[in-house]
Length: 82
Image 1 (cartoon, rainbow, N blue to C red):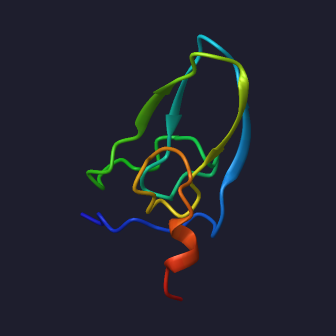
Image 2 (image 1 turned 90 degrees about the vertical axis):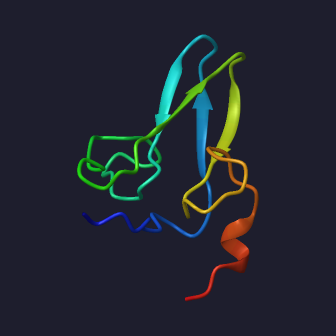
């Protein structure tokens, strides 16, 4: 089982979320539909994280998959080593 988190990108994904909708943030970094899940996590033990939008707004979803406040970016990508 490959349970290592992959960095999808070293920075956030800007997303205009819609109030009342659920979003499933990719936690593993393997999805081709970043920052959201496409099922690529199967077999990794890294299930997606459900996010419910209470209001319509622009949010910044974590792209490095190491945020301490998932699913949103907290700047952790600035401290990641190459």
